[in-house]
Length: 181
Image (cartoon, rainbow, N blue to C red; front, top):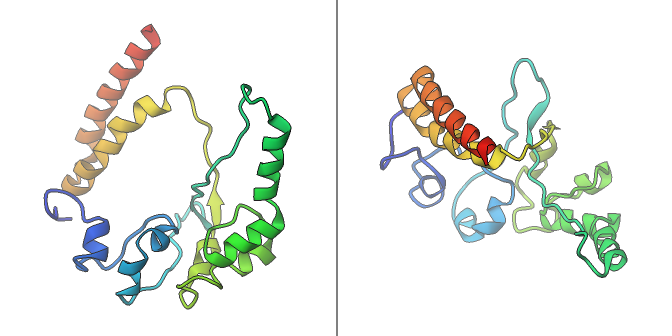
């Protein structure tokens, strides 16, 4: 792959420059940049899957709601959360094109029907099962940065052994330092 403006092609190359044919992002991108999407001819498909995990797509990227131990209105806060995840609210959000958290096929079936993009293949977001979200450790945020930074050099150079070796050393040092504290 060839570098584009000192990095990998991203959102602007797809939406503004229109010199990128495919782009993977969250399903909400069409509502974050609606005018850009209205000005171009596009559609949606499911992501490819791995041979060893057929019919398993990417992880979901949910918004989490919780009630903290410091809350003085725990019961009321929980009632708000229960309201937000109720079938009626989830169906309403789904119709607008907000990916529902409800597992109901009926709620998924109406996904995007009342959005500006109702003529697009939005239901492809549900074509595959979501991959499980792995458990997180207290070190995840610390180790995420070195591996995220490694993605571009690996893709652009193809030399994953060298890049991962250096990344592993960097991550190992950060982990050792964190464990000392």
